[in-house]
Length: 342
Image 1 (tube, rainbow, N blue to C red):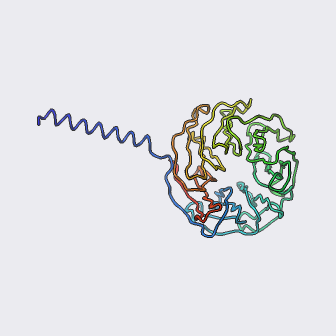
Image 2 (cartoon, rainbow, N blue to C red):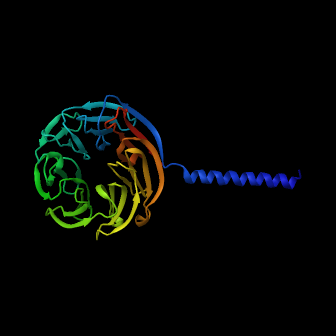
Image 3 (cartoon, rainbow, N blue to C red):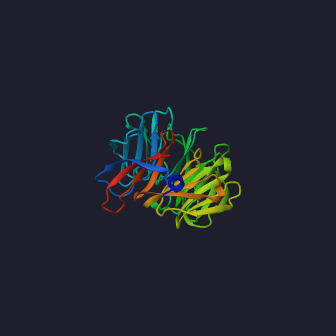
């Protein structure tokens, strides 16, 4: 074989290897599984996380287990179980605050706990059925969804509460028996909240607690999750029937885009710095979207997770995404999965 042919073969092999490396880089997963912690003996569903970065802890509401689970934020190790709840859902941790608030839809009402010891410090007495929350740090007010079908009510209520004292400051009744997640405007007074029963998005002035607009959520039903991309004037609305992320103009309510998402999702997560939206689903994978053009969301990955992994938290300072794996009605092992975010 001539030197020219040998050189040509070497160059062809080199170019092929470069092309293969490039292709691998383009298709590599944006998430890498770092750790998994088993939680034996758990049944039913987990609900939401909260990160207590000052104390290095990660908190998880074990909705059907009636407990608050505490993990080490760095290692993921399970540290302890806090009992005394009926059906905990959402957790509010505030920087430099001495208490945390845990919504509880049971008759015992939501709880104020010592942020260090988790000792019970007080209760938040509202209409039964406390669930989803949204926090306004500028006023130091937490908005809590209560009422609805789970407590045999045909309406729901949104209450503005002082998270230090548990005192209700103001409220509004919503003519919907199933109200889910909300998103708050930082540079204004608007609050966007999912009216899931009637498949609409309500826009509320949170100072006057009056409804400004009600927008239909087109393209899918059971709208339950929402993220507000305020600089781009877009709402990312997670729907369950079928699994869909609907993009809406936050000024007009017009739908600008929609993309398929995993089924049985209970949370969507947004990293604006990385232009990434994450939609974990209960059917065993998480969809990752590129949001650089909000009106043309691009699915960049479908990351395998585990059946029941439908709620999570993005800990941006550690570049980690953590998922709770709910066993539901199965005999599967409850877990907490930690992913490194690339």
